[in-house]
Image (tube, rainbow, N blue to C red):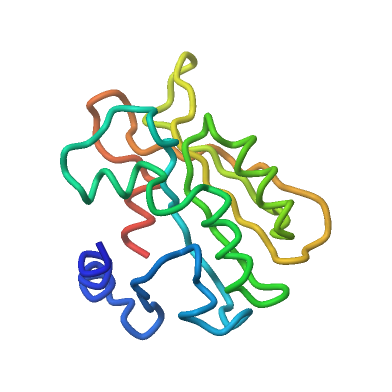
Length: 168
């Protein structure tokens, strides 16, 4: 998975801004100096062991299931790595928002912005994902940002949000 992440960084032109460190998230301070990063981006695995559909593909299994660490392990590692006042960004299933918020606060990563991600605009659709920006030791107060739609409509073209994101 580290190989794929490195490849994506190169393909997207982020080589001078990003670094991939392959290792056990539960012992991250053995790999990096504490509080040495301005930003940490994390898409932690979301299924607890024994829940969800088990993937045959080992990359998908580790990416989606908390085999190599729990949600709290990933949040704790992010808190250890980011500088005081630094930013953390988490991508997580919307149904797990309560767990994500309680654990980020526990580890002093104060939620500052929340953006709900929807497949497409429809009154009956629920958010599938959530993006949460936190600030280490930030004061209280969170902003709920406008919704983000991936598509204009069911089976439709990408939304302006997505097009603008990739254009930037």
